[in-house]
Length: 108
Length: 93
Image (tube, rainbow over all chains, first blue to last red; front, side):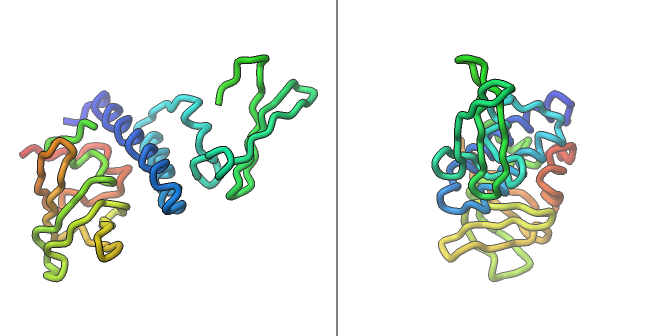
């Protein structure tokens, strides 16, 4: 029987499997990697799973590509009047995300 | 990976090795490969001869689980989008 706890548990396993697979196939088939990421997020959404921040930020919000510095993402540290920020640019679709940095402690 | 014969219907099929052991399409019988994608009514297998899209309905598929267990599934039980298959659709056998 699919109790709510079971559903979340299975969903969690599936998401983890898919995201790992996505990183594995990224070099061979980018479209496939994006598809796995998209599926993983859909499954998490269906199961109302809260994904940790670090996990969410590893993939482009717009095109779902796994963000690898140097390969699919450009990482820069910039100073602005809000403080220092880390700027992540998706090299595939151009989507930009900025995250604030606090001294040493930053979340990626 | 806690994929087992009891929860295979709800779990992820992508990444599993699978064989078609029965099909309404005789040319599909014997096809073996890794599940690479899934839609509501089909599975895509990566075989030595390339990617093959097979219908779930009307086929019997043997899945090879990581713990060396094999599960034979009637394709009809698998119908549904991957995200929908997550909820319910548990069949006890």
